[in-house]
Image (cartoon, rainbow, N blue to C red; front, side, top):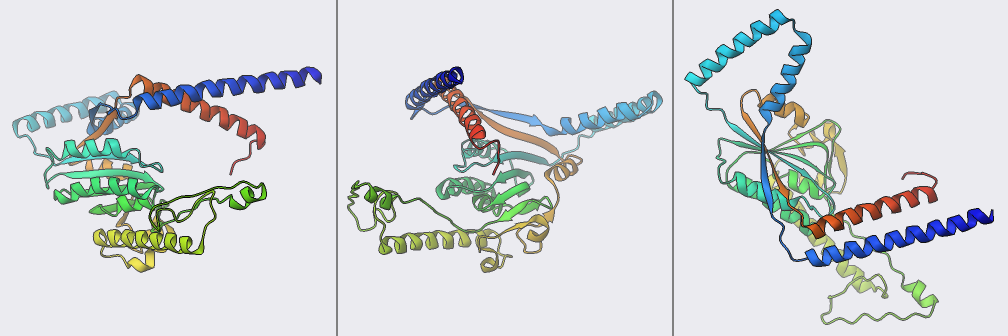
Length: 339
């Protein structure tokens, strides 16, 4: 038992030291990289080749050699005919947005939209595959403003939701000329929420004073450490109500077919129910929609890949390592229970 106790103590010290070193490295990387604009590169992939490759693989597995030879002859004739009389197919630009609480993907999205707007015309289409449960108001406000650029250019925008587009995610989705949802995707949550702990009573219990000094009556309404007042709560609630009204107005602007007061309650609906409330226009997965469009259009997937500096890569690696250690320790402490 004594050996185990010593080993546990040694292990705890080692883990603490590793975490401390990683935190220091991460902090240095963030501080050195702060304020620097990272460059990147726009990647363009023709998705028609992907769908063609899937079909070719299946044909090779299912068809006989005679059938494959006959099919190849037909395809060769079709290709020759197409070269003589080239078909002017419409273009579909495909974008992906996987949103976190800070809508971090906006940085890539803005460059992708800037690029496609240099060539796209109202005869083309932009398809956004959107996944987001929402997050910060200002972050998703900027992401939505980027999508609004597409609508302002008169280019059709189709938003596909396979899993979730709620709160700030739906704020982005509603800008689409058409919204397509998987049957059991989660949509809605047109509401605003804010929460914070207050430990003022705990501080008082231990005779700890905490002073909050402000210039401006409402510079600080609710605090974590100070004593909150009823007047501060009322002002904070007013701010939430104003934000909610702006949210409702924004959604109503792009989805006038909605009965906005009926759906702007903060509730969420699955796709099969959302289509009945006009939150979405059609039930279909993004795979189904894009494979159909690939039959008559040229599909191009755009992705702006950010080039991270050495400091940012070290910071990311350190952050990931810390998260893994914390997750491992938490799993042990909670006996592998998941919430």
